[in-house]
Length: 78
Image 1 (cartoon, rainbow, N blue to C red):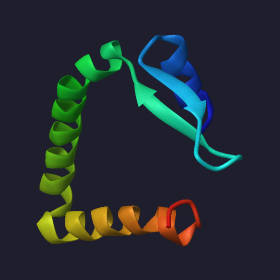
Image 2: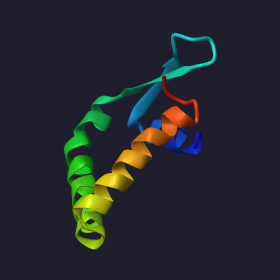
Image 3: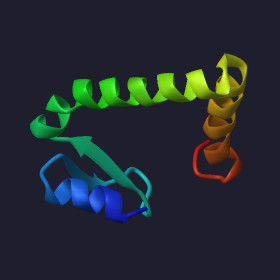
Image 4: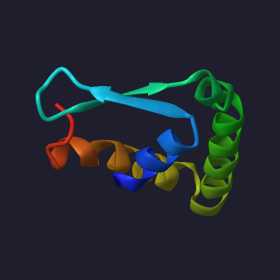
């Protein structure tokens, strides 16, 4: 997944800085990146609505909960 932030950095949407831990990286949105927040959220909302219509609200909510649980299970987030 490192190619995603690398490309966003190359295009001027974010900056990567050393994180608090020695093996971590902190990501910071640039002004250009902050300008993309509203259009990005609009796009995500539209996709979520399509998925919800296809799956039904109960299955969609279960999918969302499962996806939110995965990083913790994989040890990526405490």
